[in-house]
Length: 96
Image (cartoon, rainbow, N blue to C red; front, side):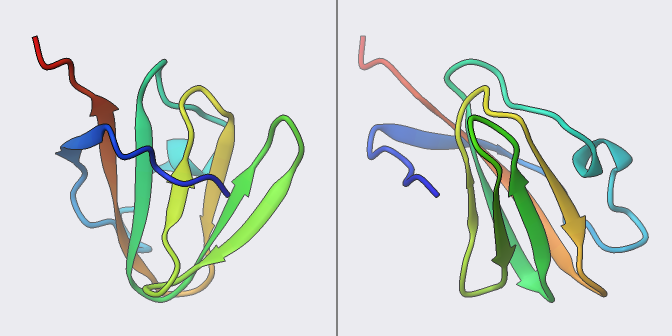
């Protein structure tokens, strides 16, 4: 899994998701826009994070291990039992 570049900053955060509010769209193949990174932050439980391209990679995310989503890379997530998490979106800002 990649690291978030130092020049990107958070600009938006989702609500906390649980088993009852987990969006179906996150469970299916999706990706962020060009230049947009994401951080999957686990508050409770575990989540399976699957990167789909260029090669399939799978990670179990916990409160000790967040998920890093690269721009435009297809991925999906799935809950592993009861869990609570949110997604934080980040991008680079020019200093102009």
